[in-house]
Image (cartoon, rainbow, N blue to C red; front, side, top):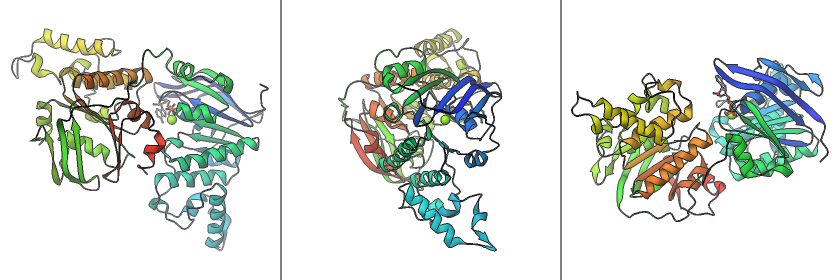
Length: 499
Ligand code: ADP
Ligand code: MG
């Protein structure tokens, strides 16, 4: 296929954050009339390289050309004024002001003749919202009262009002419903037709293969390969993302979804502020139960409640009919918990791998509170290190020196080692690479087959669909929908009950 005209060129770009090398000799070509996809595991450098193009931060080395000229944006606003706009991964609107004020933030001056002409500003904001297909959002509305999707659409309206030549969309679509996604797809298609360019970042492989004309894969801050559309191949892309072939199944391959009828853990009429409202939930023997929702729906609080780490104002948690009154009770009854914020809650970073893993298994090698059998302790820890292939120099190494994925394996090792019968996992695969993820999924499935029970709380729809027997969707402290395991369940089926 004939190559299109180059609009932006990144050449040999480097960027560090302290000792982290975020970008290492990265070169990327963005062409007119094309949607370029960027894909790579978390932390591979996607947001860093695009935010440098869009003026949010500066590179340490290398150069950028925009329409053949050297490109040194001084800020995001400067970049946008020159035709490069970016929808950032994090939310970027101010909650306390109107939609129109957000759209014109930093440039309200244009409506000022003595006083600000609000009517004119509202009208213009309305026109912009209409033009992107978001006329359901009214310019007078207070931004903070809108949901995440509408706030994202406001950011898009703001960027599109500047009629950019290049639009960067950084992991925006994941949190949106099909309606929101369609709006973005339409904008991208239109830009393409107008011979402008789009850089699209998403970790949804299907989506990216559908939407993009070419796809650049990043790994550990380096460019691995660029595929043209006709070369797109799911296995090849995955393999290039992780640097080796995935062996066997990624998620579990069965759609059976059977489990025992025995209830092992349950919440009865639970109430906890606006996090849990008249909440009832049952976990069964041999069940992988998924909990999905937006991050403030109450699901993270639920995880703590199930482990006795958070107490409800009303209602109770029962494990085999006995009240789970605190964490000590939970641990004694073989309940394990992997917190979302694992650095803070699940691991002692200033202790060794050995001490962290051993902390879960004291009863297996301690003769009394004061007498530990060192040989047995070491063997216990080594077994977990080997079983989970934790990459470390030795077991006395500090946990703080490990990568995210290996830290997470240490947490798993701690709970699996102690023979947990019930595991509560809050975003267990957040920030870990595909290889480690696969290992965790296999472990979870293995545990299920052994009759153990797992609650997995996740913001990642694909892993819930891929792994759970039953999926409970939460919204505003309540269950909004329940799905049985099925091979026809799609992300958009679920997302509509989250928002
Ligand atoms: P991606 O968007 O592909 O998930 P990022 O570009 O956000 O990856 O990050 C690349 C690497 O740089 C990661 O290791 C990340 O932790 C690190 N990093 C990114 N931004 C910062 C920052 N502001 N301070 C320190 N480290 C950062
Ligand atoms: Mg990112």
